[in-house]
Image 1: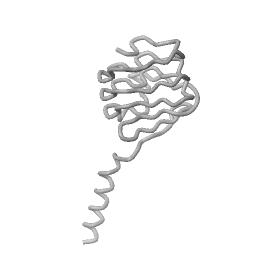
Image 2: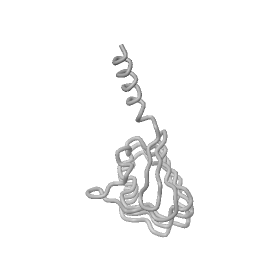
Image 3: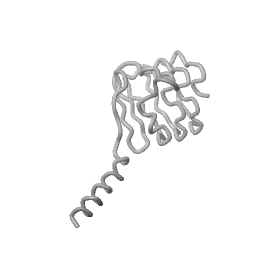
Image 4: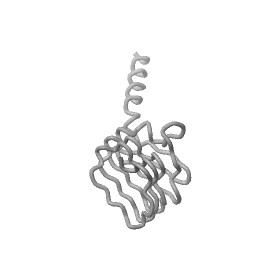
Length: 129
């Protein structure tokens, strides 16, 4: 009986693990994904990524990201940062952002509206394709 109870408790805990927030660091920034919202915070540029060798650390969750909040202090959006975030519908870009990298929002077909602040002076190739 104790083994069955322990097994059920373990299974229950493991099944709920994906409901908790995920997060980590990337370059000088931190990221947290909670209930579909990816928040990027810290100070400085986001690293560049590519689709062959260096994927963003939130790539395992890219299909469940519905909103992105970039906090003031982040200065760039890296290449391929949000590649194929197919459920993404909104993003908040602060005035501290000056660069949006190549392919940054490539294949984000659900993103229908975005406000780019005047501080952005460079938008990379295929950034919104």
